[in-house]
Image (tube, rainbow, N blue to C red; front, side, top):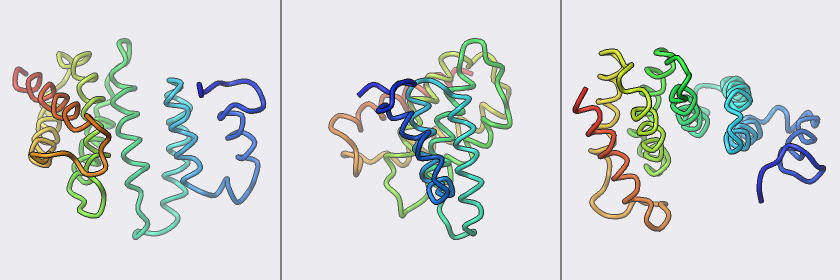
Length: 182
């Protein structure tokens, strides 16, 4: 089903209606899912707003509450947003995303496939903005791509879709090639 903005049965309309329910509105996972729906239709500003709401709600649940899914999606969003042709790179967002991604990659209790999927967004970002990176961003990106290379198994990634592991390998290699030439 194509995500749309109109009609009473479209997913975005359903999210709008659900957001009126207090109990649902207080659930960080609801805002995460709504943000992901906004990203699907390339409404990155709306997605960012909803991810910030999700992070705020998750933060109220204490230090032990995992925000890994929210931070994983925020990382993808930030690389997409900063990689837009007319976008000015927000260094703070890129550095924070690299730090978040490094933490996500080091987690032993979550499937690696999720943070490794960010390689596609990093590659797109690098293809568009490599010549605009400073030393700090380049170093952070090299570190996180090196970590991705180290974490990739020789076989198939657990919980990956058919053929996805090889696509991720290709994206990580592409990032490595671009970064090696900076």
